[in-house]
Each structure stands twice: as structure tokens, then as C-alpha cells.
Image (cartoon, rainbow, N blue to C red; front, side):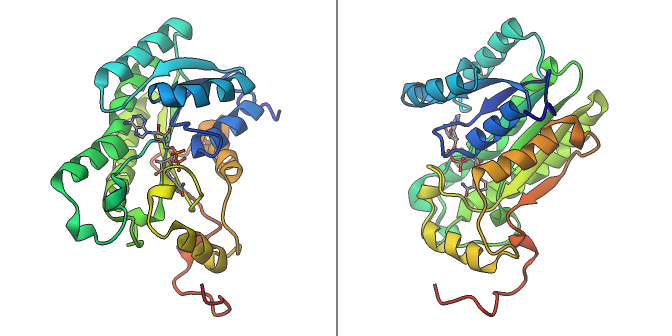
Length: 264
Ligand code: NAD
């Protein structure tokens, strides 16, 4: 326990299992001394989240499906009862239909475009609206994004468009909430094999490509993401807001495939 987050209370949204990026962040925040609460999406995930929360002596605050404003309200009402205030929040939520995370972006349907934007982008704003009222002593909000927001990545398609909008939301929210001492940032994580990532076409190929071409010649882990998140969530990052911080072994700076990359 490095004590960097001692005395801070945070809500973690987006744990599906022990491979989730949100879990990596939760573990690192707990190690740093933070007190945590978790939401889960539906009963199937409740069974996974409860034992994980118990490992970190965390509260399981309730079901939250971000397509239902009522469930978001219920979570924040309960948080107000339990804690009265909130210091940080992790938003690690995204969704798109699997059949559109393959093939061409141009074939995206209107219905899946709207749903992907609602769950993967608007939900950050919906949650920030509620968090603002509980972050009476300032706070730190963190979301997760991916390089597919900046450059075209194979199969990422409509999710790339949603992540671009999410990154813009981070900047707008940072400006709106900054005067209250609330910071809003994103971590742009390199590819990691999770439940959500398994929906993306050719994901194993993308992992290998990153391993061969990232400056550090490796992929990143949920623990790596967690440690960088502690910097943004704790007072170590107190002057950082509106930022998209890459935790990707440097992949985003590379303009050309490494010459020694074997055929993959
Ligand atoms: P994951 O499957 O473990 O987590 C995704 C979470 O989103 C799940 O907990 C799920 O319950 C939640 N979710 C989906 N729809 C929801 C809804 N309607 N209401 C509430 N929750 C909902 O996968 P992950 O890879 O850990 O994803 C977390 C975040 O990290 C996502 O924003 C993802 O885009 C981002 N990210 C992932 C990678 C990667 O390679 N895995 C890279 C960069 C960014």
C-alpha cells in the first residue's frame, strides 16, 4: 500500500470479470489505499462482481445499465446514503453489436450507431452529471479509450467513431467541471484480451501487431493500466485534466512498421 489514495472513495463502473480494465484499475486504487464501490450490469455479472468486490473490501452498490437513467440515479442515490460524497469515478463501459466490429465501417446501421454512441460515449456525460453533485470537494473522473479514435484500425469501425466522440467529451466535461475542481481524463489503452475485446474481429492479430511494433516490444496489462490510472485519479495528477493519456507501450508514436517484425 503506497498510500497515494488513502482517504479517497471511488465508484468503479465496468467490471465484468477479473480480466476487465476496470478490475486492473480497482486493484491498483485499492493498493494505493482507496475505498471502492462497484456497479454491475445485470444479475449475470452480479455473481462475478460480488466475489471480486469482496477481495478488495469494497461495496457492491447495485445494478447499473447506462441505457436506463433510472438505474444510474439509483446508484448515485445509494452512494449519497452510503458515503455522502465521492472523490473519483472510473467509467470503463463500451458496447457495440459484434457483427459490426468486423468488416466495413460504411455498413454500420443507424440503430447500432445510436446504441454504440449511447452506451460508449453519452454514458460518460450522463454519469458525470450525477457525479458532479457528489464531488463536493472536487474529484477525478476517468474513462477508457483506444487508438481507433485517432486512426483507422481494422474492424474497430463504429466504436472508433464513438471513442473519438468520447475523447471530445472528456475535453468538454473538463472545461465544464474544472471550476469545481473536478478533473476529467481518459486512458488510451493498448489492446488487452477482455470480454469486450473478444467481440472485435482479428483481435489476436491486432495484439501480435502491437507486440512487434510498439516501442517497448510488448502489449500492456490491466495492471499497467491500473498503475497509470492511480496517477490520474490521485492528487499526483492534480493539475492534469482534459487529457488523453496513452498506456500502450508507445504504440501511438510509431509511424511505420518495425523492420524486424516477422510476418504475422
Ligand atoms: P469488459 O468486457 O471487461 O468491460 C466492458 C464493460 O462494459 C462490462 O463490465 C459491461 O458490463 C459494461 N457495459 C456494456 N454495456 C453496458 C451498459 N449498457 N450499461 C452498463 N455497463 C455496460 O472489457 P474492457 O476491455 O475491460 O472494457 C472496458 C473499457 O476499456 C471499454 O470502454 C473499452 O472500450 C476500453 N478499452 C479496452 C481496450 C482493450 O483492448 N480491451 C483497449 C482500450 C480501451
